[in-house]
Length: 217
Image (cartoon, rainbow, N blue to C red):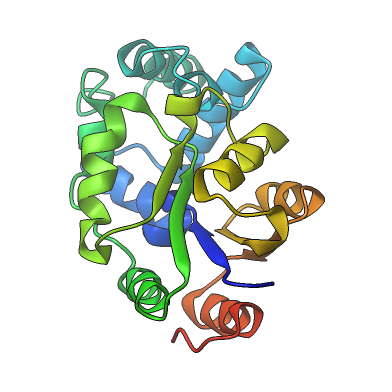
């Protein structure tokens, strides 16, 4: 590997871990993580794909998706109070009070300062861009952003890794994915990338430093 390009996922890597985000959302809405996961599972069954896929591919508006989420929650939990759930402006509510993972943004900054390529490779949503980009703003400049809703393909589809390689102008063996989902890491490796699955800050910084050949912690 020559000069590697580190591709950071947003949700669960540059953001706080997903369980923390679900807990924070419960504080805002009264909807528990278990209730959310059950509703998302039902939506996935209805869509025949991942629950977030329609909005992460830009095929459905946030408003319609959130309305379907509310309907799934109501069907599963008829007595659940949904009065605090914002179906119009779901992303604003979801990201309210969310800050970037400071150790991961510091690692991104250090990697960039050491001359490595840095990018964001994320499954994300058109309407959420103002919020998540503001959250990671403390990390400063990145070389490339490949966002599923903008390119029309999402992880773990191999095509998104091909698009990222093209954006960075590097071969697959020069790319390293940092992601919290095993299926995305496996897909990246099948495309010839290296990948490190995020479990906690100490683990990821140790493994990523060894793989990239630089000290990032």
